[in-house]
Length: 413
Image (tube, rainbow, N blue to C red; front, side, top):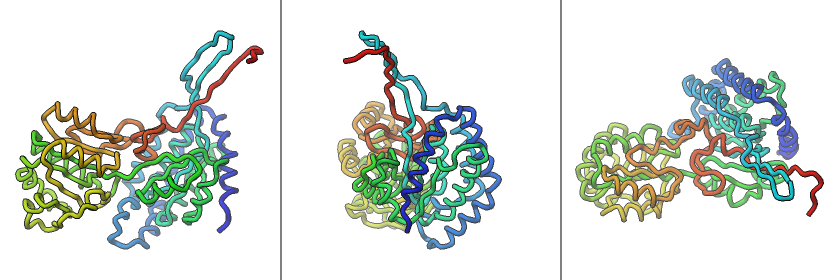
């Protein structure tokens, strides 16, 4: 395979062209991308079907890979929403005049070139490209081989609009899907300013350990719902079912349910028929296994089951003695993505909120809301579980850095 270095050089050179465009031009270009996406719905679905046709029917990633008319409409709508968001670059963050007369100004500026490595989900191609263009960043995208045809068709739509609108088409670049490409990205410190992996825990850790380019992690989600002793049982069942089954293949779905021993019997008997309805496979600890005896898809949980991101209709259940035990369990197994408590005890809820170390912590709500769009931030590149620069939904406002401008009149030190 040929080196991708020429592609990276062209993208890096094209990045500055975005900074010279007006806000109106960028908004108009994004609206045009949205419109062109709708026009090319059939072509995109056809390309997507090529990718799906070579996947095993029981592959848990098929739902992530799938594009249909409704999902394409949602992507187009998301791009429109991004176009309406304020430009995060070019903002004056601070001004001051020093005693020596130097005038200091701190402004927000684009990161430059954003590199993204991601798996399966073709909507990510549009999300990242649109977010980067709105914030005046160029981007180099490395999708997976599983979505190769879909990604190529997607980038063709974006590049067509960029050319038609007078933008440099090299501001958005799709790299070959071969896995060896990432090794060149890891060392391209001159041409890529930040690298963002989005996908499995294995992918994220591989990028983190091997990249010389600064990395912003978008972490895997081992998410918990803790049903505390003072929970409204009906509410707890509703929240738990939504967190698990509404879209099990995404990172904010629940992977483990913790329930206080004092209400375990009542809660699990009400949860049981709901999980049966959706065919949820349960990995239960000793106490919950006994309560759920006879459940159609019941297994005895192994320790490893409580640290698994299932990304499917599978779930671990553990009965705990109290909130102390629940907090200790979450501390050990959480990936610090999204954690929830269900309880009518406000004091206990506040303790949970303050003590749980995660990007998003919920009281009496489903973990499924951890999403840039749901938070009113627009589309997201991912959910960051690290603590530097960005944490939680990594959206438009985090695609900038800072620059100090110093204006003088001949001062020397």
